[in-house]
Length: 342
Image (tube, rainbow, N blue to C red):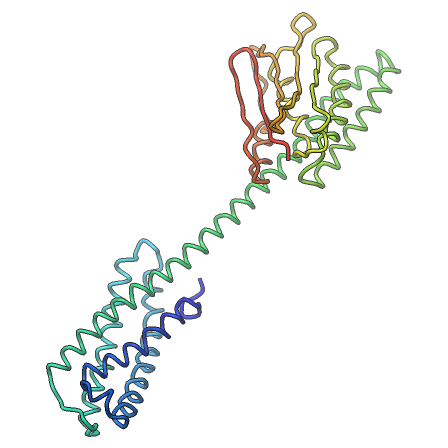
């Protein structure tokens, strides 16, 4: 943590407080003659400035060591009290010394008065309290700012690591299922297997490229989904249907890559897909530049184990990009996820 002594706030505090305190202390000790006699003003000001610099250096040595002994923000009150007692004692000794120096050098116009010395000590205690509280507040404000930045940095780093891990899981998971389908097709229908292999290569090429950018045009995602749907249709036949209602003017907008694929895969994974019980997935857009992916609900009796890919991946992407979070709705008959287009 950078010391407030090096910050512009603390420098401004010193520039404002030290000259004011020096003038007031001399006025308290000497009286109005301090302002009326140039010789008295010059000597007294020189002496009090030297004492102030000495006091500043001594306190500058003490305070960091007191802070090291109580580094936690929760120890603010204890740390402030200890700091005030130390710095106030040091300041009273320094400025009280001026009283005796003025008496020793027989400063013109100076009349020793213990009552003035007492008022000087009281003023020093009050001024030191103001400076100590201000100093600690400046320090803690800087500490809070740095802590907040560190938390944000760590949070983004954690989210990025999670996102990278999720991205790495998408490709193997999808490839595994597709290769099983391709293996079956090779023996049953080589021509269909060839078409399937072509679409698979197109899909996988897109999957590999998707990690290179944070956002892609909706039109690219739709082209990819056409190839992906061909693979699903090959695997499930009449058990799955994809319906799209996309306004042409919105196809140039952007969204995180693989968002549609993950939503469709999520629907396929958790619902029964049979010719007599078809799963219908609908892609539609709204005038508010949002896209909704919905499907009829016919949940499997025993749900597949989730590997963390799907909705969590999409939520992480949108959080990383500081975009509005997707809206997830489930009314028991239909499952809908609405996402924002950029």
